[in-house]
Amino acid sequence: MEEEFAVTNPTQLVEAASDFAHHPGAQSDASAKEFLDRFPLPVIINALQTKQDVLGLENALVACLERIFRTKYGASLIPQYMSFVVVGLGADSQKVRCLACKTVSCLLENSDDTFVSAARLVIKYDVYPLLLKCLIDGDEQVANASMDAIRSLAGYAEGMDVIFPANISEATHLRNLAAGCSSVGRVRVLALIVKLFSISSSVASVVYNSNLLDLLEAEVRNADDTLVTLTVLELFYELAEVQHSAEFLSKTTLLQLLMSLISNASIESILRARAMMILGRLMSKENSFLFIPESSVRTVISAIDERLGLLESQDVDECECALEALGQIGMTIQGANLLLLGIPPAARLVVDAAFDRHGRGKQLMFIGWKTQAALHALGNIAGEARPESNRLLNVDAEESLQALIYGTASRSPKLTPSGLFLSVLQQESEIRIAGYRLMMGLVARQWCLMAICSRQEIISVVTDTLTETTKIGMEARHNCCQAIQKALLSSPKLASDPALAGIVAKLDEAVRRGPYLARKHPEAQPAIMTAERF
Image (cartoon, rainbow, N blue to C red; front, side, top):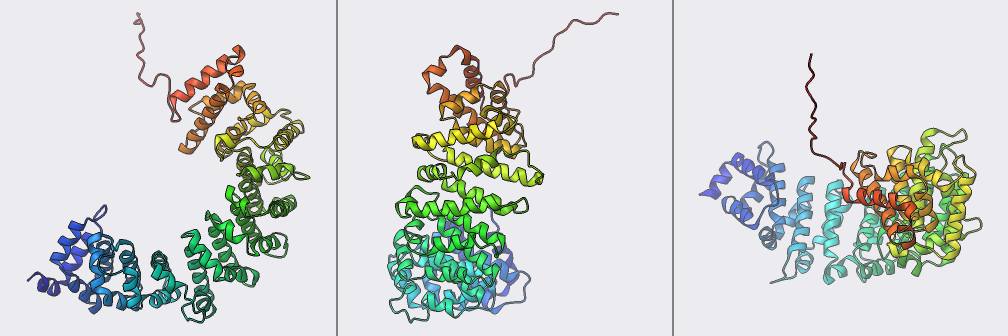
């Protein structure tokens, strides 16, 4: 019998399981069924539980079962082996516990609910408390796998009732769970809250109404442990990326809390930097301004602007984060307008940093990173990241943007905006790439388009396929070339100007040739010459 053969020949089982686990590509239902016909699940489970002394047995069987349960056929067998899943969740082996958590995810994600809801099955076997124990006590892989399983459980109405019990005194209530954990366990519970929040606006509403966001804020206020505080700030950074985050975070005291960190000179620089990045990301979406009052945005901009003005050359990371945060706020029309219309406009520091190549005694590396970050930020403000129809700002903001760039040019040896742009394109690749992005945004303005077209050297750089050697550089240069060409063609007066005919033709040809090292004559050219006679 094959089953008996598998039991008495564990080495062959390990070899077959290893081959199945490491087979390239996804395994099909047919291949999973074929394997289980040779080695039935009870045989594999028995070998895993008895821990036979065979080299590599646990690793091979765990990896094999994980791939089996990922198939529809394998997932359909899980309800018959829920007792094994329960035992696996409490196993001493971290690998087995991780497998059990992933098995729960496979059950929840692949169930067709033909006979019984997968969530009801999980509830029937009291799996949720075991998942929480894996979250708190397991190693990092087990904790992540349990988090994924709980996230899948939240996709069911029955699962939501278990994760967010009506009785707040339940031991499994996340607030109570966090209160009784070590600092590591508490951070994991907070990470689970963030993962649940990101599922949908409706789940985020339950998280908010359960006052679970307060737990994250409390950890930031208690800044005794810099590492824990930084970890929680990273969780807030993830929260801020969620599309519906502003709707709920704007109702908390998070904005005030983060601004107090920015203005606190006694804390670690990295904490201030992350606080700025969170605020920037939170306000980088157009819908954020539906929930965050303009007055609050102005206050945030002022706090970051003030901090940026105080930074010196030793604060490379914080300076870069401040510039990036302002750039993220500038990704939206409303944010860009506010950056340009303050008194003084916060965008002035971004413009100054974007074209500061003199350093005035500062460290050269600091200048390079600062310039690169500022160019990207200014590119966002100019609209490179916005749809083409939304690149232009209101009249006053456009006047401010033009005045800032002309003013910076007049105070530099370059004297003109075209001189500034050309100087950027003459720097190292990373700065050139940021410069391409900036010009892509600015070229929607007639004054900038004319400035670019007034310098043949600029056109030569953006049309030369040999300028860049990296894929990202080639694509950025070509995108810039396309943006200039499109801006010219959208202006009939400029497109028909005889003085610009050569530039138009050069841009057309460069766009047709594409971004990747295309040449006019890539084929070999024969050389014909008369023979020399002696």
